[in-house]
Image (cartoon, rainbow, N blue to C red; front, side):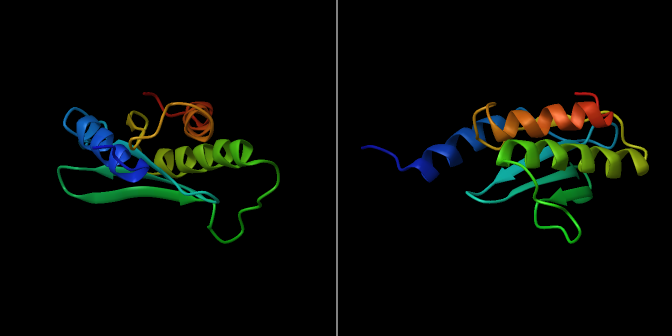
Amino acid sequence: MALTKSERRKRIKQRIRKVVNGSATAPRLCVYRSNSEIYAQVIDDQQGKTLAAASSRDKGFSKAGNKSEIAKNIGKVVAERAISKGITKVVFDRGGYLYHGRVKSLAEGAREGGLVF
């Protein structure tokens, strides 16, 4: 039986989450993307808390450029917010998406912002 796109992504996401866990020393940088928006969170899985977050829906965020450029800017913003809380090292959770396009741009933006993963 063929899986739908969302079921396939859910399976891949579960497979990734078996391996990728965020801790206090290296929290998880989690990515979610919809057709029009992109979201990023830095999560400590041991406490179950979000330490920093950014999205393309934030107030005051300009949507200049294409989706990949917006994703790169979100990566820089989430890195800036994480560093202000004393977080420099993270593990990257691509959320079942391919490491390509907007997901890759967000990761590169976070690296440029100063996060190490």
